[in-house]
Amino acid sequence: MRPSQQVARAEMILVAGARPNFVKLAPLYQALRAQSKFRLCVVHTGQHYDDAMSGSFFRELDIPSPDVNLEIGPGTHAQQTGTVMIRFEPVLQSVSPRWVVVFGDVNSTIACALVASKLGVAVAHVEAGLRSNDWSMPEEINRVVTDRLSTRLYAPSQDACENLSREGIPEDRVRLVGNIMVDTLLAQLPKVDQDRVLSQVGVRRSGFVLVTLHRPSNVDDPARLARICTVLGKASEHEPVIFPAHPRTQTRLKEPSLEKALGDTRVMAPLPYQAFLGLMANARAVITDSGGVQEETTALGVPCLTLRPNTERPITISQGTNQLVEPEPTAFLRALETSDGRRHRIPELWDGRTAHRIALDLSDAQ
Ligand code: UD1
Image 1: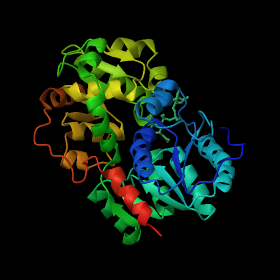
Image 2: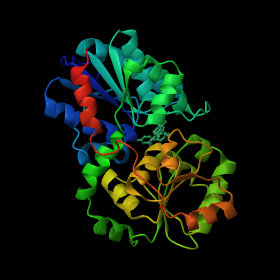
Image 3: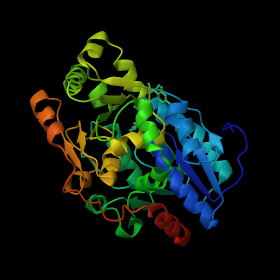
Image 4: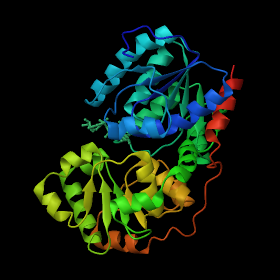
């Protein structure tokens, strides 16, 4: 349904805009439905719009078609944020909910939190409190502002609660609930035909490296992207390197010198959730700059090398399988060879019950 049409009233709007949001929305939608206490309205902002980045996630994760699609599409940060705000405001007025639930740290998250808080509607933020302390990341600005505007802050880990406390967020707004992406991972993994996924891609269990990269700081900086392609190319001399590339990255990798540097790295279109999960669970190691993938590899016990100078998810390093790396050939290849994921443990409350805890808390909230 387009935003211009009248939308039915509901007590709660769940907002999703970009690929990682869908993975977080799915278990909460199902937990709230099971509770049948609130009438729900799902708003898709349309920040991600391709079947590969959006439609396939709705189908595989059993999310119903959104009640409203704001269809904002691509744009600069100001264009995306502003267009979501302009289109979300009349929807919010028409639905008139008690709660707007937002997820993660994307532009759609901050835009809807701003609109709701200005109209006096309570905002619940799922994945609150994560901080990279790196203000050059658009997501860090989105995180800090969204948390400041939220009435309920659902934190995935104790370090996130500590960040919020340091920023003066009253403790009674914060709930430590665990990691909601792990709910989806644990629910979906048994449904994945792992042998089929591996044979479709033509790789063996623990016999390949999986890559995902899309951060502007990696893929929009030509010199850094060239260094990254070089280290991936070197890695591909030793074992298969599989690289399902985000649209932003695919565009950049068309440059012939980068194609050459990538060597035998197999660049392919983005994969649907289940196929990607099947590959991640069986990879010898994963190379990424995604927040969600850092967490998912920790949940799976698969070694993860994060191509970033910092992370807002330090628990994936202190307890999980993650390490930060730079695209410097010698150190990078040594880290890739020696990473084995041992010593890791699953962080507290990353148990598949996070959505249930949030649904219970929302139903008790005044
Ligand atoms: C966004 C989020 C990022 C998240 C990532 C997950 C922000 C600030 N960033 O970054 O935190 O980790 O999503 O993927 O919100 N595109 C398509 N098809 C799509 C979606 C995007 O081709 O379905 C293209 C767009 O045209 C655009 C590019 O991909 O040129 C980037 O999309 P955009 O939404 O601007 O940000 P992401 O890099 O995906």
